[in-house]
Image (cartoon, rainbow, N blue to C red; front, side):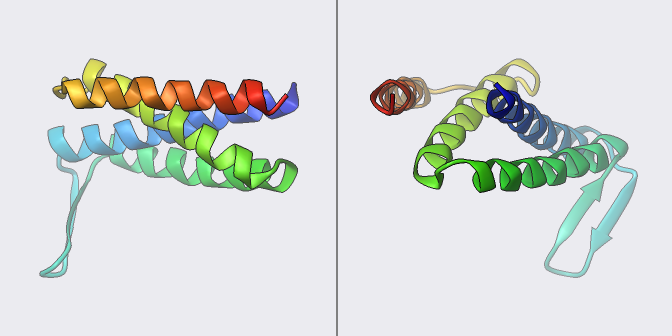
Length: 119
């Protein structure tokens, strides 16, 4: 049960971090870091996104230490991919393609196969 809660926390922090960072870099400019090659626009939501994503990394390390990586990595990556795809369409109003939808179904099938076959 604790593992599932940490998995959910990881997905929420990762997706929140990515969406907040992207949203902040598109819609607001508070601080700009430029060195000729890198042009990074930071806003409050971008900074919160970075903190969420950094927190998700530590939760992921905890999950890796308690689970087999050959199971955890593909399952969590697939869930995060589909969650980010959904959130970017709903929140950022990005376009979704037929290939993305088909790929998501294959990912879901693979996740279900790993979860049920693993038992």
